[in-house]
Length: 569
Image (cartoon, rainbow, N blue to C red; front, side, top):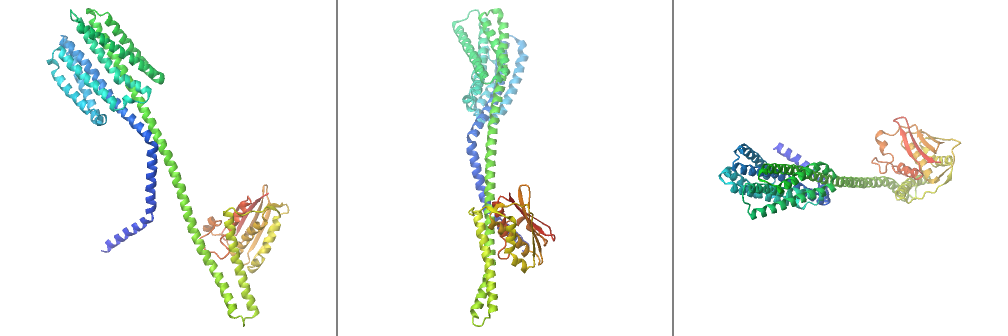
């Protein structure tokens, strides 16, 4: 039971400590939520564009895989047709295309499992796989035309899926001209072009093998040729537009474009002079066009992907820059707010402590005054003259100390509020020092303190407020007397330097303790003081700074203290 109570006690203690930080914790959470909200708002548009581009990159990867699959299926359709026409030596090549297509199917399958839900391709891709499984097992069971039609249908499904991806992956609405025209060539032009060329080559080969060519086949040939030629021109035109915006891409793609254009023109030129014995040559030109086309497609797709990746990286950098900027500003704001809050809290605590100390310090002399007055009042008939004078003198000196404290507090308030008007006039430093010593001669006499004045003859007059400087020097001397033993020796010096006058007040007292050195010029010190002290050094610093001077001290234990301050000449 004792252990249970002990543990519960520790838990309770922990939560009691936690309550102290509860408000800061809640404020911190709210502040972080605010900063997060600002970051989200500031980066919303950039994040949207980045996600838009990221989806385009996914579409490009998917289309790239489908492009390789399409190329192999077109090649297999062409080889099987030749095989079924009697070229049995092609059997090995047909088998190789099957292996290659299966590899592409596997690659696309992985992409579809990963991105199919985002790009909405799963249904279309499943149909393509089903049709391929059917075709690869039944290809040799069809006649030539049925086989060609089945493969053409599969190719149309792949082309339809590519168009679907261009839509669902945002490629079709790409905002930049350079990447849009690359996309247009890849997605909407190139694959259609290769299919038209394949169909045109197959039709012409079929026509060469016939004795009589009907009018329908002639019309179909003309239409296919016109469509392929138009697609070729669109592809070249798109690339020229891309090159005008991205000269770096011209250096990368120009060779492939020229090879594609040359091969296509040669293919069309050969079609115009086609004869029966030139069917082999037609196959060669068809192969060259397809090879050049897919080389250009591959290069364009890589260029498009690089453009999109660069764009995405640009958006990421923008988001990072905006986020870092907002976080930096928010941290800076939190830091200054925290500093302001801590300073305000510290000032409030110091003010409360000062008022408590002030009330305590004022209470004692006021009680003494009250008692002295009460004693005089109670014994007014029997009190002797010497006793009356003694009580009156105590009342006078106590009241003088209280008045000095009130004057110091008012002076500090005036300095901090920048209301004090410093009356600068030409005065003698030596005269101010001598007058200050006269002011405190009774205090020095009471403590048997000896004050020496050493002012160099070459010390020039300065423009200063004589009353305020007197207050500084008096305060430094009185502090030395009150905080040291009787019989203290104090040396007040003044000497001219290159740009200012240096005044020092040094003593041979006990020195200032190390732990008090850092707070000597602060107001509202934590240490309890006698009435009339505790604010003098802070006020002295304000006065010297108002005169454009500096004040500091040097002290060693049991080796005395020296206060210095400067006045500009």
